[in-house]
Length: 259
Image (cartoon, rainbow, N blue to C red; front, side, top):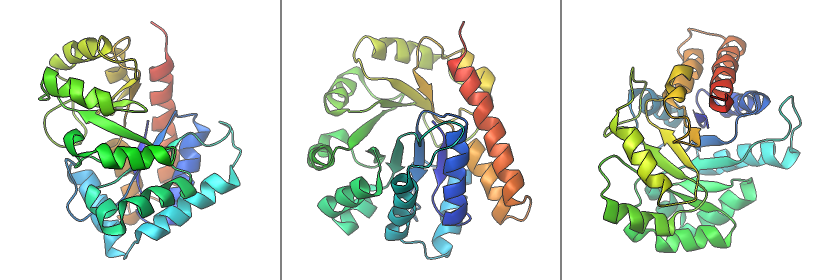
């Protein structure tokens, strides 16, 4: 499950990146809505949000770009587009209006929403509004989430569970904590929903330790950094997308490997 930032360096490149990832048969693509005060995002993703916002990117433009992709139902080496999920701050939803936002997300072709700053205890109305439009409101569970609170979150969860691997912000890390395996094993006894691990996943070898415990991995900063090289003048668009394609192919192969 790769993550990319909408509008960095521009929406034309974002659309190309989505198609590039789809060609490698990724299972789902998260599209980040740039926000001036991101929640739990590390420096790489924060910088990508800042670059996009400096160009006066508007939410309506993101919806329009996504709709161009989903309406065309593009065929490529990997088939049709995988499901697209919006990673979006609740402040953006609130400012636009809950009903208006979820309707626009549905019309654009999104399959779900991840709202990291919306606690499950306060998410019932948003979950209902999203569900009415056929969207899953995906819930996050952190290493610090207590078992009691986790059970309440699972009651509201739809789509899959976003399992945060570490306490802290997103970003590439050398190792994943041993406690994560214990948490994932327990979660498997509590829900039938797929478990996807994010925060710090960047290499194929990290996937092996999660096999049998997690159902998927979310790769964000490693991909965003490759695309960032375009705006920083360190890479051409074609080369950066080749790098994205290579990493996606490696992660897909590791995720679907047997044994």
